Amino acid sequence: MLEARLQTMGHEPLRVGLACNRDFFERDVDRSQIARLEAFAEFRWHEMNEPTSWDELPAPSAAARSSIVDFARELDVLLVCHGAPRITADILAESPRLKLIGELEGDRFAGRIDVSAATDRGVRVVDTTHGTSAPVAEWALGLILIAVRNAGALFRSLIGGTFPFANAEERRTDPGFTNGELTGKRVGLIGCGHIGRRLITFLKPFDTDVWVHDPYVPKELAQVLDVTLTSLHNVLSKCDIVVCLVPLTPATEGMLGEEELELLRPGAVLVNVSRGKVVRTDALLARLDRGDVFAGLDVFDPEPIPLDSPILRMPNAFLTPHVASTAAGRLRLFSLMVDELERFAGGHETLHDLSPRVMANRRGEAPPPR
Image (cartoon, rainbow, N blue to C red; front, side, top):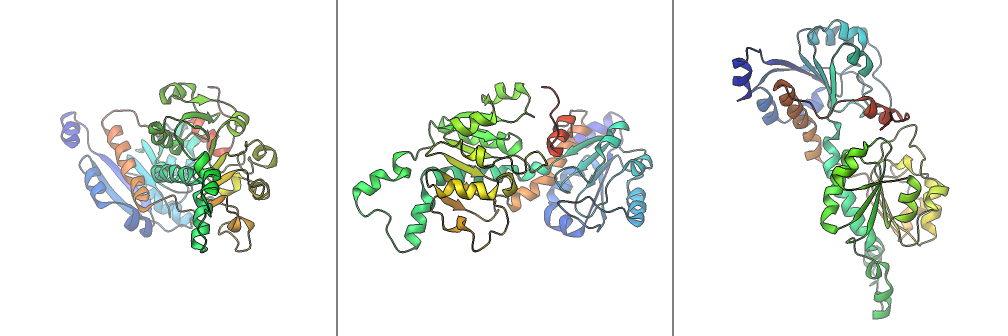
């Protein structure tokens, strides 16, 4: 047991605290993972109920600051999530034992932690918000398979009471029949974070040629994953299937507009499981309206999709209402953090540090040199 090893080495178990609201603690923290954590650490939970938003930082609050300082003062590790205040430089200054701060899921962009202040104090910051990446990658693969078979249009016909093929000739000219296999296709990924890397493993059995546009990916990763790093122009113009996986940042909002979507060649498939605002809605509708490309979309702008939106009636668009994430994925947020803490307690390197490259990506800033 790790606890025995730590005691043999003369170390006290880590003091780990989680600050979050009751809803997250009761719904998304698996008690078996707490038991695993308590095999090598002392664990405590501190209920906090600061307003949480995907888009805005938690507002400063003297009461919340006092509460988190009292909680964190004796901790080695502070984990934060929904309900916790922003961990600022002054809070860190009053938490002398802290060696690591972990973000479970605040706003996905580390807004809940002053990463620079933590780094200046020698406090490591790790983030396991990618726990939901695995099911999103699964759904990306599902949307690819649906779109290449033109299954959205066929389903619309069936539920509308019309069998899709009046004769054998119509069947032979259906895009899903003439060009409906994923095997051997060239797949382009726009973004290659945790979702992209998982998706690449799912694509291996299909013998696909994977091209990636992601200026934040180290070149060494391309060799490990056996992918081609390339430009956005090449991904859009030369791939059979294009999958959008980038986070929504000031740099990616509206990055796929009329000029970019025009590069899609006839018969191409566009899949988006990232955020609807990455693709300009007017440009997407115009490109799909021509009927020569196909889309599998789990996200749209705006959401929910307006009932009068033309996208709902386009046969070449298969839509789902932002359902790529799952309950199991949410439980994985905490279990991945326990993995990180076990590595940290054992003297190993953590895997999910918020490095300058990661932070530049999340802020939409220019990436550091590769």
